[in-house]
Amino acid sequence: MKTLRFVGLDVHAETIAVAVAENRDEVRFLGVIPNRPEPVRRLFKKLGEPGGLRVCYEAGPTGYVLYWQLTQLGVKCEVVAPTLVPVKAGDRVKTDRRDAQKLARCYRAGELTPVWVPDEAHEALRDLVRAREAAKKDQLRARHRLSKFLLRHGYHAPEKVKAWGQRYLAWIRVQVHFAQPAQEATLLDYLNEVDHAAARIGRLEQSIDAALEQVPQKMRAVIQALQALRGVAKLSAVSIVAEVGELCRFERARQLMGYTGVGSSEHSSGQRIRRYGITKTGNAHLRRIVIEASWSYRHRPSRSDVLKQRQRGLSAPITEIAWKAQHRLHDRYCKLLARGKTKQHAVVAVARELLGFIWAIGVQVERPSCSQLAAVRA
Image (cartoon, rainbow, N blue to C red; front, side, top):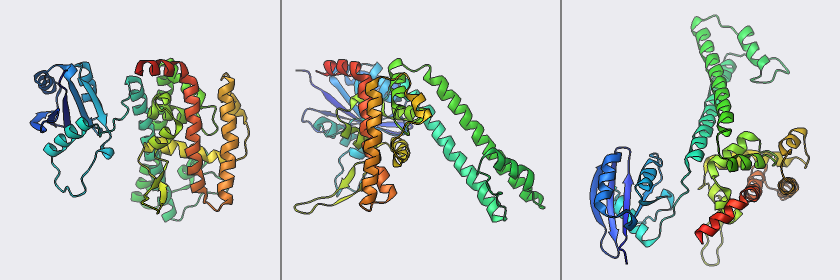
């Protein structure tokens, strides 16, 4: 029987600490190497045949570059969730050496949870979507700076002028002036920052449209199908697919809910049962998108012209799932409000169930590939 070597890597921007565990032997620390392709290649050439190696490291800011390099070398590598690595309550010493040894030991024992590693298409789309999300946050900050600057000096927009529309910006440029040159320069800088943020978002959205034409057909089909749901327009659907990947990798909808971090936390012991708010331990980007989409289900079920346009060309089973979602989620929202829950709590509960409909639509579209994947796993 081939002896397996379990390798734990504590990866940093410049260095990698390496530890190896074999069978029941004590975990050996091999030292620290530079985090560069050539030293990594030399190390794993010395460790033995690729088929006898099992490697893991924690997900972090270094991304998946090391994973792809080891995979190309023929080494089986897994990226594990850092928040799910077992921690001893009384352990107060943390070093790179100890971290690498703990990873090797826990990996050998099967106590680590791997994360999903996106393929090239998913990772590229996710980077682009997150860049737009960062641009939206910067736009919000720029608008806040300008609005609070105007408020501090007593300027108020005319009635029936919607904030941040074209008339609002034209009012600032034409009607707002300061006697002091320093304040005039401040106003000009804040305005330029707002314009820059808007132009940046426009460029990124055009890039997303162009990227959608290059993604695989299966991914494009899922993005189009998810838009059948109320509250899930193109950018929301793209964000969901970019963050989740293949929805059929989850065997049940509850697993997708746990991945998003919208399940209730619990601390029970014996006869005492205590449940708290959502765990928030999942993908924060996905959770934000789904909760924002869930606010639309506070309205009665209906098919607007925009929604009909998005559903045009989709199969009947998908549109039926979307219509069922409208009824069920709106009823859920109303019942929670009747029980005295706040709007925020009700919307989070709706978001948890919305993930179930998202999973159902994704599996409906990916069903042929899911069957092939299940056959390969078997």
